[in-house]
Image (cartoon, rainbow, N blue to C red):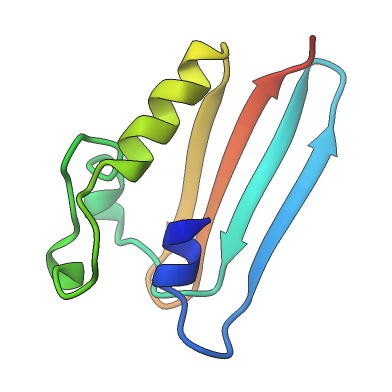
Length: 97
C-alpha cells in the first residue's frame, strides 16, 4: 500500500479489494498511478531494486522483496498486473486455513 500511495499522483485512486474463494483469499492493491513497464516487472521483487525513474522518492527497494517473502512463508503468492500510465494491480493470494 505504501508504494500505491507513493507512486499515485494527488487525486488518483487506490482500491483495496478482498475476495474469499474456496481455497485462497485474494487481496488486491490496485492504483491508477504511473504503472510499471513490462521490462521491469520481473525485477521489482528483487532485493534493493528500484526503478530508474523513482530515485527521487524515498525508499530502499526492499518493500516488495520482503512482502513476497512473507507471503511465500504463509504458503501464498503475489502477482502483478501493470500498464505504464494506467496503474498497477498487485494480487496477493493467501490460503484459507
